Length: 134
Image (cartoon, rainbow, N blue to C red):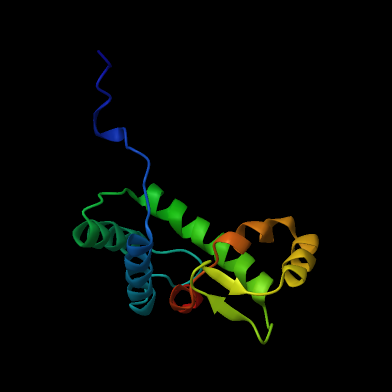
C-alpha cells in the first residue's frame, strides 16, 4: 500500500479545448476587472480564477497548475504570432486545425524557427486567437 501524502499531492492537470476556452474567458474577466494591473494577476485574481474554474469545469486545480497553463498559453500564443505575424492570404484549414499554407511556406518558416513545426499540425483556432490576444 502506498503512503497517503494528503491534499498536497495533485494529479497533473489535464486540459481540453473546452476547458482552455473557459480558462481564457475567466482570465479576460479578471483582467477587465483590474486584477492584473501589470504582468501578473493579483492574489485575489488567482483565487477568483481557481474558484470560478472549479465551478465551471469541476476541475479543482491549484494556482500553480493554472499559472502553468497561463505561461504555456502565453508561449504558444507568442510563437503563433511570430509565425503568422502580418502574413496575408493565409486561410484556416479546419480539418488540419492550422493555417492553410503551402509546403514551401511551412518549410521556409520552419527553417527560420524549428519550433514552428509543431504549429503545422495544431495551430490556434481563430476564435481562441481572439481570446489569447486579450
